[in-house]
Amino acid sequence: MKTVVIVAGCQSYRTADFVAAATLLRLDTLIATDAAAPIVDAAGYLEIDLSDPARAAEQIATAAPDADAVVAVDDEGVQAAALAAEALDLVHNAPEAVAATRDKLATRRLLAAAGVPQPDFAAADPGEVLEAAARLGYPVVAKPTGLSASRGVIRIDGAVDAARAETRIRAILGTAGHEPDEPLLVERYVPGNEVVIEGLLIDGELQILAVIDKPDPLEGPFFEETMFVTPSRLRDQTQHEAVALAAEAATAIGLATGPVHAEVRIPPTGSAQLIEIAARSIGGLCGRSLSFGLLGESLEVVILRSALGIDSRDTAPAQPATGVLMLPIPASGTFTGVENADAVEAISGITGVTITIPKGRPVLALPEGDRYLGFVFAEGLTADTVEESLRHAAAALVVTIDGEELTSEGIAASLPE
Image (tube, rainbow, N blue to C red):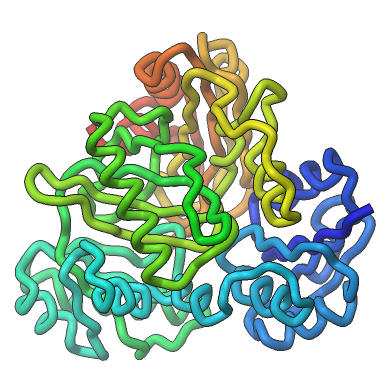
């Protein structure tokens, strides 16, 4: 029986899905996590400190010397996983390449050195966002270099907004346990459609699993993801350009194996531009909207097979079209419930509703927050019908925060038109 180490942060949405995939593949499983107590049922647990990837890797290598693969669930674990796999002489990405994906400024510099199309950018030390924005030309987007899930990402349209945005981002950094005075990334805003490229690198070659549309335009001032639908409805030539760009970016950064999640903007004129690339698969519970082959294997099964050097039986989509609605947090406060979930599940095309935040918990809207209330999943014969089902779901759900109901004028209205 083969052994896999699953590296997961205590806040990860997906640990249980990876454990379920490992169980299906009949793997021995060790969960390496910064949680002080077990977060899912599994045979083995190892508590590690993900803020110290080198030390975490040593602990993993010591605890599982005969492991056959080390797989990270989310961004928090990718560096520890790469270092542990290196120590165990397993197939792995170069740790320095993985580290670069965790630093948006480092990513931009590597892409620039390789000539990969991307937004013009600048680093901004404390008090320099205004200067950087003026030099690049408005509108710009300012963001922390090391946070994820759009946390702290703010569009700036003019000089009046620049100082206010910088102050807010640096406060978010402090709350997140980062150094508030660290450099920020300022990049020129790129208009247009955005797509997700989901794939696997095998010996340096990018195998595409899905090209995913983001039907709602992400125009700011904050950039909360709301809806993913696949297959993409963009022209084939445009999709091929986006896929080629993701592959070029992975090579430029030095990634060679494992899952890749890339986000690409398609401006109204000119070539596609790389917005982000990560050495992990799609975040949240969005991976549940993807399944493959006649058996409908999960994304996590496909990732584990690849990590173990086992060819995937079939990576063709199991369904003609699928999608997911990420339930946004429309206001900060105390989450007190979601109504009409049963009615939403009865909507044609909807396959499930999962609420991920317990009642009574405080919630933060973007740009301070980094969580979702939950996820709604759909499938259908076409991407258009999937999108229609998800929009009906958004209009039907009733979310209550601090006693204030947010119905179609809250949830649905929080989705861009």
